[in-house]
View 1 (cartoon, protein in one colour):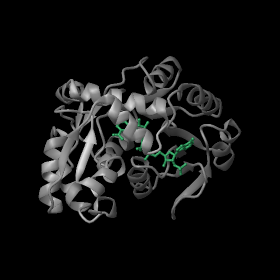
View 2: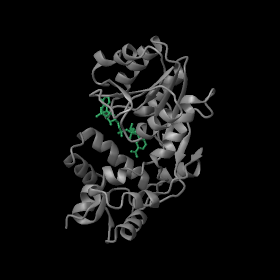
View 3: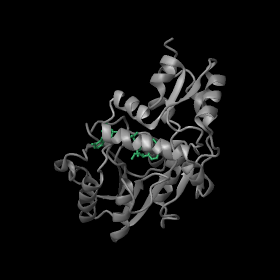
View 4: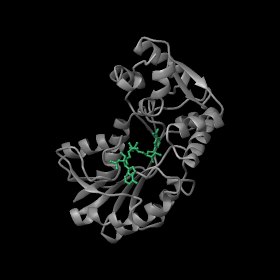
Length: 281
Ligand SMILES: NC(=O)c1ccc[n+]([C@@H]2O[C@H](COP(=O)([O-])OP(=O)(O)OC[C@H]3O[C@@H](n4cnc5c(N)ncnc54)[C@H](OP(=O)(O)O)[C@@H]3O)[C@@H](O)[C@H]2O)c1
């Protein structure tokens, strides 16, 4: 029986794939190109191309559980529903969906997928993590490199930053336990940090002064569009920063069902020499 990981080489699926491999559980990684690092098996799969939806099941007819990473488009529900329907028809019994701490079942984005899974006769878990450590490298590095600044609209809102290794641990259990322990766990890391506090840690670890520059939601949206993000997606992301500023992630931290153990400071230390953070000044 095989587990299919969509977003197969992404941030959370990569450590999850390693956990499954180490446990000798057959795993198949879906990516748009179909190519994946050895020793994994890969399959071509594109959420935005329905002609690829059956390829995983043609590659391995024993897929019975799927890890769902949404495509980076605002209206992800139609393609995800269509693929979930194909998967159920092919005998898939369990889905583990990557949602987000602030997304309730039936709400926006993955919230709709969560609600759909609930409406079907399948086992499911909707993971609801807070923000990933990796964002500091992937989303903020351009300004860190150029101006030693973390730029966003999150103000002094705190976040319960979480490691994708901690997320992978929970996803592994949700995919492999005989019974899913919690169907929609809010997941956070061990500590709350504002961006100003993160800038202090980064200053300490990288050995140069990094500051947090707070901008308006509109200015932050423009920054993300300049980075190449579609305008509608950037609008939602900047709205999320406003909700962080208003304390929404801090509230999620207070009611979390799972608290990870990996520390943000350790993550920054591990990536201290990352080229993404090297000063270009
Ligand atoms: N970052 C955060 O702080 C955070 C917090 C809470 C929730 N989330 C949610 O987590 C999810 C992202 O999870 P992740 O970070 O583990 O994934 P990820 O690193 O963003 O990786 C997603 C992978 O999906 C693949 N992909 C992109 N477009 C695709 C398409 N059209 N069809 C099929 N595959 C496609 C890409 O691989 P290829 O290019 O190889 O196809 C990419 O590596 C998002 O839904 C996000 O909203 C993120």
